[in-house]
Length: 575
Image (tube, rainbow, N blue to C red; front, side, top):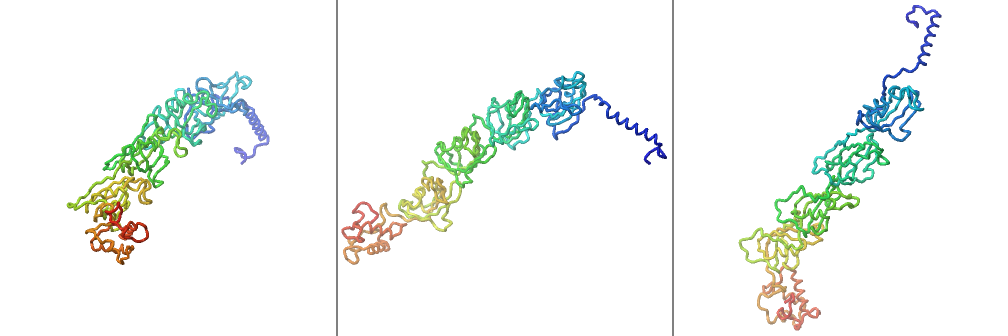
């Protein structure tokens, strides 16, 4: 039924009448004057997920707007002027409707505000721009809000697990930051320059808000510092990226902190139970280290080179802070040395690895140290009850040893080979420190030797075995000894010398002694116990040397005129 309420279709006259009335109603609706507004209307066109701050009466705001009439015709725009509109809210510096509309708005919120004439310019209008009794529409974007009572606001969003020190007035800091306006617009960043901002705090080198906001920070801490323009760049801004009357937001991470009065600090000391000696100025130290910045950034390590760092201390060979930090250490000690930049690499740093004005942290492990004036340290650890005689220069001795570095690193041991080490004392067959440590020792005696490198293997060491400039530690035990000959002799007679010595050697009686005759004769004397060769050497090499000394003219044979006994001539290693 197309005509509800009618059982039959209505008469044609009624239909015409109803259609005519509908047209009249529609015409009236299209041409009726707008319904007057009693109050402002606000349509929020964008609401940020987080409201950083909402406007209150008495706040100062910065906002952009486009002003239009209800028909869409624009009468004003802050965008056209290229600057925000800046004003206090609720202090009658705005038309009443805008004063009301701004209260409660959040930064980055956008709203369409419709203001009736009595809350705008009323019956007077505004010159030739706004007619009397005009409804005004404003498309408003709030960018900033602050209050004259505002101070610095700090929001710490990361705190390091340990904080040994906090920023104080007159400290020097290194930090990274991102600087934005309150609406999030980035105006500057140290990260983009890949360089920290380095400055003193609290002495006027920074804007007042940053001076305040950095106080109390720990290295590694991250905080957001928000400041009003009175503590930032004020009414005029910075002339380029920061507009006047702008709130500033700095996202800061503190990387470094020191004071010009700082000295080095030593922490995390691990001192071995036995420390018989501590380093002094002039000592030569071998140590391992890991070097980092105060925020933990690694810059160097001796471990990565698989080699200790070796240097004199107290002589200016290393940075001043390390020179000081290595004094008074024990072998085996571990310590952390924190060095301010004025005792390290100063304002310039080293270039790529260590930035200027950086505090340095060294985790140090002392491997060994010595002094150029050191001698071999000899400690008797076992003395047998009976000691028939003691070793001396020229004796042929047999001994066992365990060799290690000062940090306990094993170098070598005769026990590994199942045999003794055999030498002639005084024949330069071992390092000078070992030579000294083996003197005046009894068979069965045990000793602990500490040998400085200048009496050991020196600056070069032994490739793949003993590092350069290493102090050596030997635990030795004398197993056997054979008495040597008097100094200067390679052969001595046990009995009286035969008056016919030359004739006895000259077996073929040709008035000259051949090498074979000489060798046979000497070896026969040794075998029969009538004479002794110096122990520990190749007997044939000794005899060859003796023959050469007697063969004055070097013709390969000894004549009776050439032949002399030891007592008849200046000292030689001969008869």
